[in-house]
Length: 144
Image (tube, rainbow, N blue to C red; front, side, top):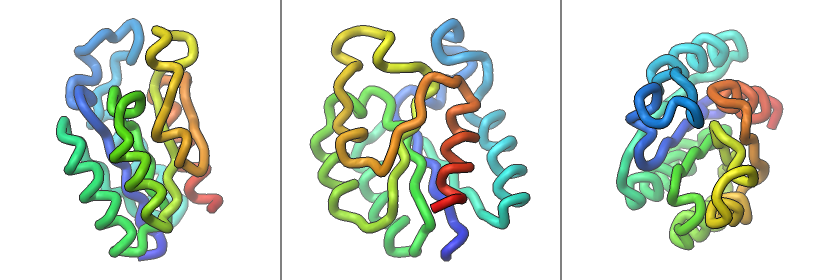
């Protein structure tokens, strides 16, 4: 489906709104999903938002997005961003463009967060704007 955007979220993002709100904000993943779905409709797009604490699920969903001919994948891989060669390989293995999304700006945080395997393979990265990062990534995906 040409107007389909996968929004994939990695470990601990199910705790948004509760986990370290001073870093990640008070919005829950459901709050973000609702705003994204509203904007996607205005853009003539459909959102398929998912979250998993398991790396393999994210990889399987990226493969599925390509098989379904999704327009793009918005990926907030959480901590897997900094550790997962498997996600890097999965992004490189598919044709569907991937946009890396982060609520916080990893470059202003701990040193280990400055390296992104996801970013090395993604079409682009949007980070540091809190929940707005997802909306900016959706606008970018709509323009692809």
